[in-house]
Every structure is written in C-alpha cells, then in structure tokens.
Length: 387
Image 1: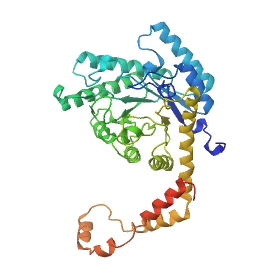
Image 2 (image 1 turned 45 degrees about the vertical axis):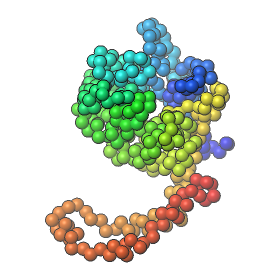
Image 3 (image 1 turned 120 degrees about the vertical axis):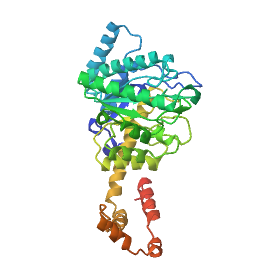
Image 4 (image 1 turned 180 degrees about the horizontal axis):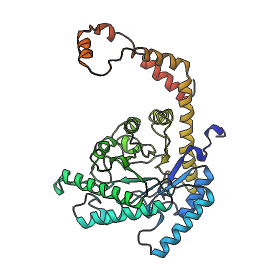
C-alpha cells in the first residue's frame, strides 16, 4: 500500500459526493449502521485522503425545510471549510426523487403543479451550486418513469422533459451561470421502467433541445452494467460526440439492483478499459466516485472505501501505461494497423465505380488469424501482474 504511484493527489481530480462517503449503510431491509457525518466533516475527510473535490445534491447540504437564516449559516460554514481545506465543488445536482411529491416523477409527472415545483427546486439548486463555482449540473431522473404505461403517453413524457430542459437552459443563460448540464441514465430502479434508460438514449434526446450545446451526459458504471452493457462503450460514444460532461465511477454485478460498489471491485477488465480510455484521450473532467462503503463498515472503513476507489483508479492508470508500452502488444497492434492501409475515402461517382470493380478474395481474407486471443491474454497478464 506504500507505492507513491498509487497515492492520490488533488491533481488527479478525484471527487466524491456528500451522499457517497456520507452514506449511512441503510437499505430497504435494514436501518442505518453509521452515524450521520456532517457535511463539513466530509470535506475535511476528503482533504485528508487526497481528493480534489466534493459534490452535492441541494438537500445533502441544506435540509429541505431549512429557514433562510439556517440555509445561509450552513452555506457559509461549508464554504469556509472548503476554502480552509482547498476542496473544490466542481458539480452540483438536485434531488427530484426522494420526497413523496415526486412519486410520479418530476419533470414528467402528470400533475403540472409537481412539474412547476420540480423546476423551482432545480433552479434553487442551480443557485446554490453557483455560489460554490460549480461548472457542471447533473440531472438524474430517478422517478421519471412508470410502473404502468396506462398512466401516460411516452411522447407526452418526452415533451414535458424537453420543455423542462429548455426552460432550465434559458435560466442558465439569464443568470450567467455557465453550467453544462449532464443527464444521467438508468434502466430501472426505483421505478419499474425509467424513461431514457441508457446513455445513448439521452444522446439522441439532446439533439432535440433548443440549446443542445450546453447539455451532455453523465454515464455511471453501475447504471450501464445493471443490464449488462459496456460502460466504456457508452463513455467512448459520449466523448466522440463531444457530450461527456461528467462521469460516475463505481462498480456493479450485471443483473443486480443498483449496488454502487467500490470502483474496480467487481469488473476488473471493464474498469481497466474505462480508465485506459479516459487516460488515452486525456479527458480533462472530474473522476467522480458515486459509490458507498459496505454496510459492514464503521467510519474508518468509509475512509478505506474512499481511498480504495482512488487507489484502484491509479493502479489501472499505471496498468494502462504498461499496456501502451508493451512491445508484444505493440507488435500485434501494428499488424492490425497494417490491414487498414487501403482506406475507401469519401463517396464520389469515381470512387463508387472503382469500388464496384474491385475483386475481393473473401476466402483468403477470412483465413487470416487476427491474434485477438493473444492480445487479450497479454492484457490479462498485465492486469494479473505477471507482465
């Protein structure tokens, strides 16, 4: 555990939410097992272990029914603690899933009063995040879905969601906040079916917005892996589209409930490819851990959990460097690159005529071994530490 290569520093841009290290270990079948950690104590904990920043929902920091004077006191104390420790607030978000008023959704609810309240609550959360200089605002539609499609038309729900996003973008402009909105997808839970269940569904939706330039996505490992999808593929598509505005790192057994496990603790190969992609493209965003400690842990165990998330990321980062520098892997990659030398190019009548006239020996092409087995084995040996 002493290798300085794996010791986090603020330069690594690791962030945690108040709701992550502050998770008390409750679940649908059991009461909390840890005392509540005040937000200012969480900030000090994160500074102690080498994190860069802290993120929050509005209600994580300021309890929902706090009087104005109490809100101001909490905000001032939190701001001072962040200044004292050097901890930043890169992202803010809003809780539109916990309160009973959102039982039928927030922006997509049938009741227009609920939709109006959801917009008000979000704008106030934007105001709060702006006080700390947050540049990204995440929106997770945890209740935007159904148990029965008898309750509403899906196109109506999509239109309501679009209208809400357009409104919030205009508010963002009017206030001069400069937020980038990051939409977070999830296939199910806590509702049976959630609208926009995957990152790619949101990428398509964003193209229909009036200010699509300020809206991107926040892919989460657990949410992609719950249905057995590849997180790295979702992240890569978002990045290639210029829409990777934020990311949630944790881990998940496919086919299970949303587990929010310590990053890299389950899907080692998937986590490696994700880290390798982010580092190879030199993504400059935050590495945010949206996970929580096992229910078995005390407060010291929570520190072990948070340190473990960051250390594992850095281990994978070092493994990615070794992968890129491996002579055996480079030899295979060079062979793969050599097969891509005859590019088709852009369409023209002449290029189409040339392509139609070519003769392909498909049997000979099909007989070529591609060495993917060897490439994967070399990858496994690096991950297993025998390279």
